[in-house]
Amino acid sequence: MGQRMRVIVMGGGAAGFFGAIAAAEAAPDAQVTLVEAAAKPLGKVRISGGGRCNVTHHCFDPVLLVQHYPRGGKALRGAFTRFQPQDTVAWFKRRGVRLKTEADGRMFPTTDDAETIVDCLMRETRRVGVTLRTKAAVTAVEKTAGGFTVMLKSGEPLACDRLLLATGSHPPGHRLAAQLGHTIVPPVPSLFTFNVPDKALHELAGVAVDPVEAKLVVPDTKPLTQTGPLLVTHWGLSGPAVLKLSAWGARSLHDASYRATLQVNWLPSMTAEHIRAALVAAKQAVPKRAIANHCPLDLPKRLWRYWVQQAGLDDSVTWANLPKKALNQLVEAIARGTFQIQGKGVFKEEFVTCGGVKLSEVNFQTMESRRCPGLYFAGEVLDIDGVTGGFNFQSAWTTGWLAGQAIGV
Image 1 (cartoon, rainbow, N blue to C red):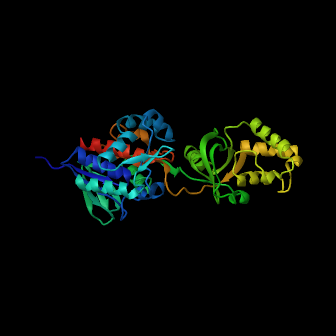
Image 2 (tube, helix red, strand yellow):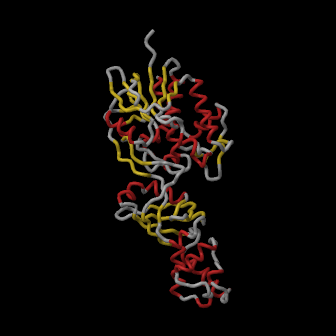
């Protein structure tokens, strides 16, 4: 009888847990140890989706699924044919956790409680015999003839035959990957809100419009467009349309020091001519009414008043007295309202970065390193990021599962 295979999984997040469980299931005789620096594992899982945990997205076609990944979509296409959202749903269902789909396609546990997912993953690690070690920060990894030596901050060395790095987007994980021969694409934030220095706009905080068509113009790059809900906040603009633009424009926005222009079509179902016609009709239908108090379009009242003020009209101006220049300004503002972005805010539910281990250096059939045999990767340590909606968790489940399966072979 040979010695038991020893596997160490670094990182107690979604990808690390999934990888450790998959490895222990694929190789029941292996000794699988999961090491996590924090006192409590699965931190991101606990807070995702406002504490409800947006487990995955109801997109069961790999070809469509990869379109939600600004970086990594091409590499994930094959991976998703082997483990995709449908498989995630089935995985949790077999373990007593049912998921439900919301109108926008996001999937949550039916309990609406992230602890359901945390408890399931903790229970599974115990069931399959994974040893979980918390408060176990790793300071160094050394390649040895037969595998690796992982040095803990406490000074304790842990030897293993195979190592799975699932350290998320944290610099220490990237540093270890680089020491083991990997190229790191510099990480930059990927999901964030736009800061717009406009006090009058900030007063509209809480106003939401669904859908808008938002176009991001970053100097010297091709404009990006997204359609979806937009939310006005105390510091600028947020909501799915903005978060998607922040993901697709992550690198160019970073390079432009987060200075850019956002053009918003508040009524994408109408052309500028339709909007003009509606305003002209109001001029004839209600000439004596104050423009500020009568919006002939399907827009929030506070937003309409903002645009009326931006056009230089005070609250007493009636429709009969609407100057042609102001009418043109209103049409332009609603069809192509322009905002100057000066900086980024935070989107607290998702701490997503783009950047990480260069994808061409990883075999996506097995998630094994092409540079260092016996080393595997899963989750956000890789240069993969998805837009908001459960896609980042799905790439964590998929890469974790594939790595665990391959490690266990």
